[in-house]
Amino acid sequence: MDSKEIQALIKFVVKSGAQEVSLETEEFKINIKTASGASEQQTSYIQTIAPQQAMHAAPVAVPVAVPGETEAEENGNYITVKSPMIGTFYRSQSPEHDVFVKVGDSIGEGDVLCIVEAMKLFNEIESEVSGTIVKVLVDDRSPIEYDQPLFLVDPS
Image 1 (cartoon, helix red, strand yellow):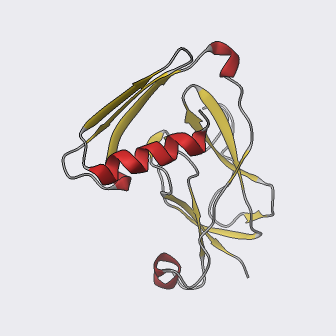
Image 2 (image 1 turned 180 degrees about the vertical axis):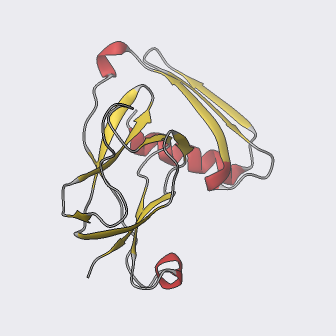
């Protein structure tokens, strides 16, 4: 089961109104719990146990909102960079390293913006746009949800 299938399962569980769903196969076990009346952004947590051979990190492309959507309109002509998965947001490789990007930094397509840890995998989140970081919307080491806004980028 890949991350897109897991995300689809989460959306289905949230929309169904179920408070808890467990799925177990020979390869993995997923337990999804939601708060009462939770929306997609309010999923409490996901616990997944997968075999060690499936534990390989890979760069992940970041879905980006296009100007004209509600969030983009509220923030002028900024592009919102959103999380492609549920996990823990990290601004740097480790506490000893500098952050990947900070407000005012110029970025290009393919630049690493942050790391999202999901199921013991550390996924580098790369930019799909060029521009300048206007705002970091998430605190370091914070839990994040799928499609949660992470950065505002000025494409001009």
